[in-house]
Image 1 (cartoon, one colour):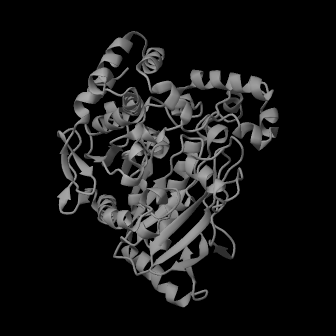
Image 2: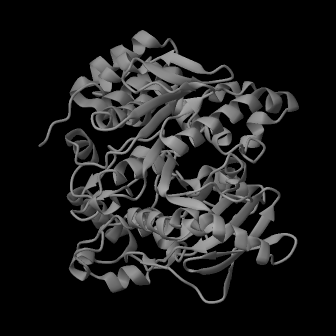
Image 3: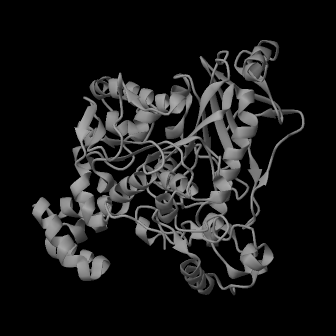
Length: 518
């Protein structure tokens, strides 16, 4: 009888219409009312937990009366991701900011679910741990839900609110997750999905996590967290590994610098909690300079007890199927004028490499000089492979020792913005089919390009949703190749298996070197 509970819940919809454009469902936590968008039901701004400054999230499991979920809830305090900032500049809808920002959105097919429920896909947004929101229009889940899945997007605390570590926080709550409140939020959201998603017609026993950039890094990191065991059943890592984690000592060193900047001592939590929100937001560097971002997950001994890559290598991480991939030109998104001036000559690039690589700088310079004539092209490749491409594939290879892992490379490049190539995040308008939503719209601004790219959008959504259904990503009839097989699934206007060209390139960054127990 239990397997038919989602079907029975949906049959109640016929008795619970709240009007021609609204629908009510009964969840374990109570009644909820959302919007009808043709063949999709949409529910926005659902609070899954309460957030107090530098305190663990407090789950919200029930509510009185009927919860009206017609509009997005507040986003977490931030300077804003690139898309959020562009939206504000152009007057697009952007929800207000508030520290109590732990809300999520749900899209579900407006039909009776299959026995057991629809597969569930939970998206974790990127933004370098300092910006972004699950409510951005580019993450609208309606088109994906039409493929027969329940889609969830969520907010989690960012910047200082999500990843500040202070010694006084340990004294206050030894098991509070010092420096990892953003990760605790994500864990709480997945827990909420397990408890409530059957009411939306979803299968709580079939939850696929997918994330991009810092969202993928979050999921990769959660694989190693003992608190996240069983949070999800499989994961898609889009352009993000799990090597960017601070030790507690490194995080405390950052906090000492912040303390001088804001005028609070490290042990004065009253002072820190009294700081205006804007002072804390200002501590975050823009997400386009990811290596300089000082707010990242922390090895706090509670949420994270060891380096995630070590946990993956030793089999102590969650052993779930993964679909792991990158774009062909990850760092092309970084096109700020300052970078163009500094990195468009070989002397400028060599200076940068020597500042970062120390004794191995000559080897790195020789590697990129042998591949590129243009210093700027070499710069994009160097930064993208070092920060995103090779760490992502490295995490997948480590996980593949214990669970199935499939690989892809996204190769589409818009002819309308040829200089950007297959940039970081270019797969997102295809995954969500939001190609006509700003700022992605600029890359598909002609009817010809919208029509030309439509088949790729269909196959990308098929690939992601097939992985959510049974753990095997399929583009057309062909499953994606296993990562490490020498092949990747190439996704372009013509898709199919491609030789894994990253194998030799990533040797420079240790992607083929074993990680052993410390």
